[in-house]
Length: 634
Image (cartoon, rainbow, N blue to C red; front, side, top):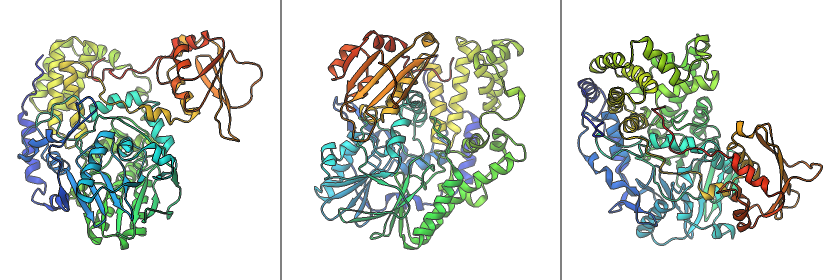
């Protein structure tokens, strides 16, 4: 099968032309704002890792200067043209951002002696490059503080590119974060991290060539960097709205926003600059209520409430709002209008979805029916470049009602493979289905073509005709998508069908993240790898004794394997365990960071007493995730 992308079908080309005529492309305000305050660009904007390979290539998007081609939704093309702008920008005097170096922005707030860094990107390499650009034009100021606005990796992973663990431990660089940050930051990237990372490769188009028939952006940013992910734990927890902290003379007033865009999140007002950092709760897109890579469903009702609170608290004393993505909004009235529109967006989706749930509608039905009010549809910043009305409505349904829509026909359905076999048989065989699907494709009914061809591929994964036509179908759906992550999913699905699986380029569960797992979560990370059926008849206990436990904390845990489940407790237990591990909390991540062999544990400084064969048994029962599992094929 050819892996060369194809052109746009007539139905998609007509859609793009209609959007070009219908949407307000003459409105240039966003382009003025995105370019405002530019101090310098980085040339070339390619960041490499220790081995010399690129971990970020902003120059790969140079094609975006052209007009939108038929293979890209013109609204998404416009958003990518805005997001791709890179360099050091002045937000207001004393507050600067480096944009276009990663999926997210990093912000530098100048203090009395140095600079406070907010949200240091995903990778050490990109964060260091951003800091170097800032220092080149604003002076070699030391980093005197770090702030994480929330618990997603694109807001903390590059921290060791701007400071060191030693400076933080010595108290020279405080690290501030919202309460609960560490727990959520590490657990999200470990428990289901393999599956999330695999799907993130689709979400950000990791395998796709940059270009008009490939990856053009992800809506929130262009893509994710692939460098070294690090983590330094916070030293100061922000716990309440109204809490004030002063770091290096920089005054910050915090607003808590838990369970909005992230489980732990906060907004920051800088009263001396009349500036509001909205973190990721107000950006120039409809955000995700359930990200396509997978996560816990977010709370749109609470999210809207936080934006109302932000307007009430800071609206009259704010002249600029900036976020950890996209570009700022200047002017008090414009800031309030922007925050109000974002607030109304999440409130409307929540309230109207719940209204229709209570009329008996399912998530899919609501997603097909519900439209935004004209005033919101006419605002560029409410368009679904990263989240979408469709999948956000389904997320709200899931939040309240779960996976089951109440129809008993959906209570016990076949797996995709078994359903596919039956559909194909009912419809006259694979060849007949592909022939009929070709008619749907030619007629522009791409969604139906994808539906029926998906059944054929799962029933007959070796059917070349079905794979080729399904790849073509996904490609056209991608070309038509306004949402950057939908486009990347569709085009990545086409790539898997044509070229096979392409792996996961970034592993978020880095050594730093694993090292910061609490002990219960570290044991949980082992437990979710146990092959349950294989472990049914095994039974053993392992004691873990810590020699560096803080006074008053539990110094001994007992792990117990029985009935295929590995559980743990810190409560005292009678009798000796089968094997005892004596170690420090710092060395304990060796249990999940590599092969569970006595020699490796000895090398990590973990003392083993008792029956060492228990460790071999435990190792034989571990079944770690597959970072290259198929998604659009069985």
